[in-house]
Length: 189
Image 1 (cartoon, helix red, strand yellow):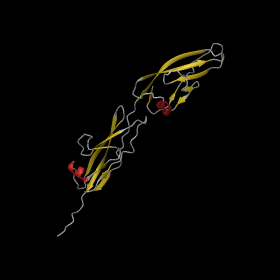
Image 2 (tube, rainbow, N blue to C red):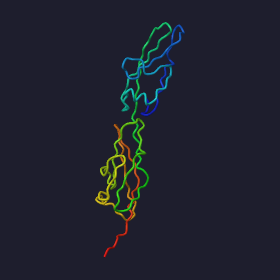
Image 3 (tube, rainbow, N blue to C red):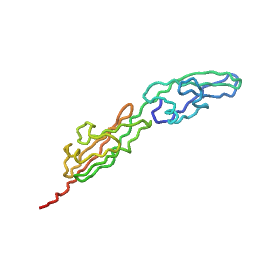
Image 4 (cartoon, rainbow, N blue to C red):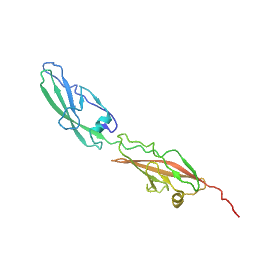
């Protein structure tokens, strides 16, 4: 059992040969019947390789095979299982935002990550109502009209805003603040 994004170290050290012949080891990680995914008694397989083999990281059980051959080319095959558990993405809503009233806000969730490299969906809660429905995307630009319609005051108060980042299995959240500074009116007689 490993977590998404981590390497897998295989272990065939329990394999034996009655004649004490040298042994070779071949691994089938994608259960396609071909023992061509790794070699050696205890190879370490990088996450990128596991991901490229199409192994799901949703907690499902994968059958992996080991083929051991001696110098006389006698072969034995056995199987075991591998479970790759999903790791929730890490949400990063960026540093505190400060803008002047009347201007647009560009949000930045580019610091968010997913251990397995899954595609992420970004949703923002700008009015702190617990609903992530005010902006969508990693770096959306929100107009002043939208901010004003959300009822955010421009009196220099720091408003709590949130980000929800979702991968193919689950989501995580992060928060920061948004301060809208008032701009004095311009008198024209």
